[in-house]
Amino acid sequence: MSAVRRNLCLSAAGLLLLGVHEAGAHHSAAQFDTRTEVVLEGTVTQFDWRNPHVYTAIEVETDEGERYIQEIEAGASSILLPLGLSPDAVDIGDRISVIAAPNRRGERRIVLGRQMTKADGTVLPLNIAAPSARAPSVAQAESLEGTWFAPRPGLWRTARRKPRLGAHGGSRGAHCRKCRQARRAFGVHTGNFANAHGIPGLEDRRSH
Image (tube, rainbow, N blue to C red; front, top):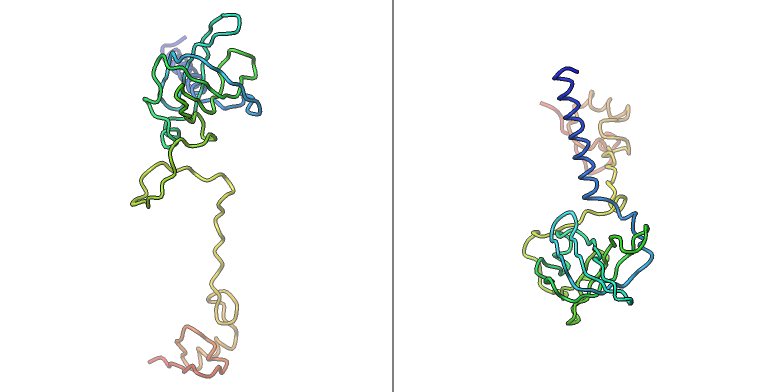
C-alpha cells in the first residue's frame, strides 16, 4: 500500500471516529420512554454544566441497601439557564429528588430528567418542558438581547406576494388595446390608464 493511500485511509478512519463521537454526544431522545415518569432520590456526586446537555449523577440506595450511581441527562445549558437552572444550582453532596423519563433498555441506565427538587423544596427545571423556576417578570424589554427559540416548522409560512395589478385588473404592464391606442394617439404619460376610457376627473398629459 502506497504512503498516499495509507494516509487517506487513516484520515477516513479518523473522520469516522469523530462522527461517532459527535453522534454519541448529541443524540435523540428516542432511547427514553417519555410517556412514563420515575422518581429517583439520591445524593449528588456529579453536576456537569456543559453543552449539548447538562449531566447530573446521584448515588441511589435501594430498599435492600444496595447503592449505585444513576446518571441523569438534562437539556442544554443555554436553554436551562433562562428557565432558572444555573451552574451553581446544586453542590456535590446535596440530597435531591428527580422526576425523569426512564431508559427503554432497562433500569439503572441513563434517564432523561424533567425536574429536580432540592431538600429545601426548591424545584429546578431539567428540560425545556419543565415549568420555569424564575418568577414572572412584568418589566418591559429594552433590547432584543437574550435567548431566542426558532419556531417549529410550518408555524410560520412565507406569504406569496401577489402581482401588482394595473388599471384593468391585469398585471402591471399588460394594458388593453384601447390603452395602447390612446398612448400612440395622445402621448398619455399617466400611471393610470383609466382616463383613456373616459373616466372623469383625470386629465391627459401630452408628451413634449
